[in-house]
Amino acid sequence: MGRLSTHVLDTVNGRPAGGVAIELFAVDGEQRRSVVKTTTNADGRTDAPLMIGDAFRAGTYELVFSVGAYFRSLGTATADPPFLDVVPIRFTIAESDGHYHVPLLVSPWSYSTYRGS
Image 1: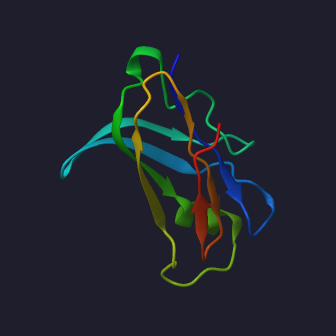
Image 2: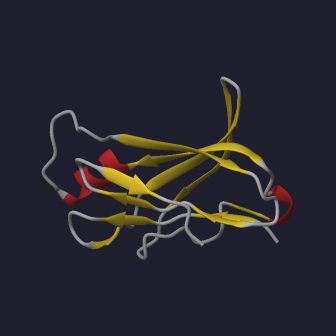
Image 3: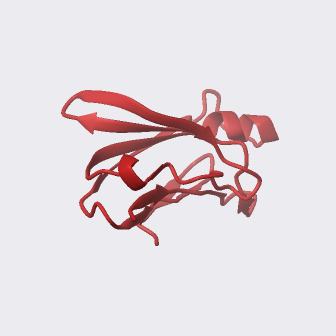
């Protein structure tokens, strides 16, 4: 059964990033449709997969992470306005039965992602 999951790691503080707002969009050309809104838990993960089973479909998607609000909530020093406020990651799901894990490793100044498992 296919599924999409994510987690967020705070690389400046060396811990999972709990409380990060995330929105997943399905992308069709220039159009975006919201699929799910959620927030990371204390482990930096969502409580459930973002898509699973019949809801998991091949296509182009965009995960949007609200990292500026997260770092402000911790009192982490950032620029004003923050260098990174909202981080979008656009990716394509090709395997309708695969597990796509799209993590975000982030600081106020940089981020990285990869397709995990």
